[in-house]
Length: 92
Image (cartoon, rainbow, N blue to C red; front, top):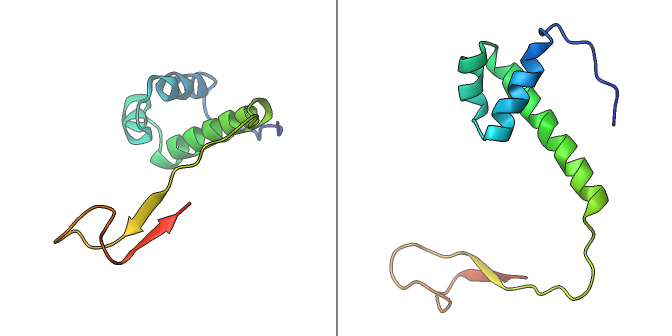
């Protein structure tokens, strides 16, 4: 993990961000509750997500058989729908 840069935020502010992040509060709502700039909240949530991804990448590795299903993207909403619609592309 990288060393943290010095921050001008009060020491309790990152703790409040973490509480709201764990609770699932959107960054925009957290800014209004905590009383900081929206960019600060967005950056804090982004850094928290990066730390979680880093830890999950170290722990989770795929083992054994993996099953992949097919998906379709594209096509038009009007008219016939489903697998038989012309213009869709199968993605594996």
